[in-house]
Length: 460
Ligand code: 4AD
Ligand code: MG
Image (tube, rainbow, N blue to C red):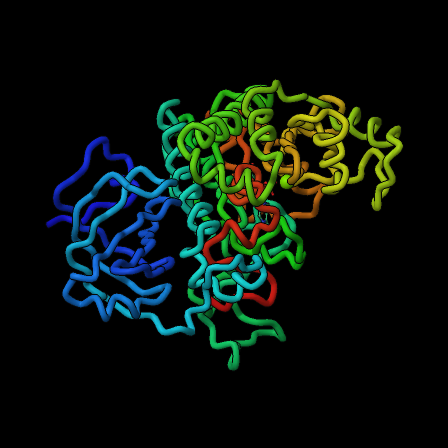
């Protein structure tokens, strides 16, 4: 007989004569002549209640079943006599696949997020993390569908690269050299001896590669892992995170902002429609305002605010900030959150940032001082998207690279693309984990990543 998943079982319209489920015991309690087992198989937040009559063969074994044990259950799906659920299973046969010892670390009480991080291998078995990672999976699907429906092609950009797209120097180096016996030439490590014959690193962004493909295939996107060795131990930074990076040909920064807004609205709407049960858990236990935040994110018109005006608002505000703001300073999380949570009370897109605080590839505006950048800021998180129109004019791009002191040689191909059929093009990066934080109300990025990588943490 084929196993049926609990989420399907619970949707049944009629009783079913013969079913087989497999899962893990959440709880068990005995009453006279019966044992009641709550079983969960990870396919849904809800458990199914299994009623076992003491006439079942191995009843004495079943009475020893502990939380965490794995079972395979055959029986009937029948209307539940007890309250609280429509269906229950009347067990005919229970196969104990594996009996967990009493030391199973997940007991019925609520555990703290901090504790669960120390047992990251078991946290997918809890209600909260089961829900979080089911949502992560659903949203991944929705992202691909969003782009597919709009004619974007999915490009697999490299994980190992020789460039630093953001120019922030937060690179994890990749090497095959023996670190205890490094080849040295003229007092320096000789990377010609290394695997690629030059220095390599893990990608910080797929953008530069995506740009090349956008100039051939039109609208494209990447969706993959990116790596940053930024030593900031905050609740919104991870060393390994996923980014969604669309890149559009023949598109300026206005079109870029339109797409960013549409994408965030689409994904929040999707989750509200498709993940209702899991979302309710977060609305109940994690963030009481979650549903109104999502409703607001999904339906309001996002404010579009030039950086200069953002600075004016922040300067005039009565709020005390830890960091000072003036033209030329980067917006800190506290500033971003003030704008979106307190001042406008909805998502805000800040654009036209000073060029001095943005990477080399952004298109310089006519004022010569700002670039066609755009960041989407959302409540509780701050920046969720960072993007820009790209500098498509060769001379301007070369001048910018010189200005920021970059060695142009390794970027010859990036420059070359501006020689042949260069066109205005734009794109952005949506931080996948930050999006999940917005959607679930989970306030620490470590808790939306299956096995998070942060400074001094790579246990699992
Ligand atoms: O603003 P960022 O650095 O932009 C880029 O990397 C561009 N090359 C993207 C592009 O235009 N194609 O990063 C984009 C987003 C941020 O807005 C944030 O949501 C997320 O990536 N992000 C991080 N998320 C988690 N941990 C980190 N350390 C992150 N750094 C950036
Ligand atoms: Mg950014």
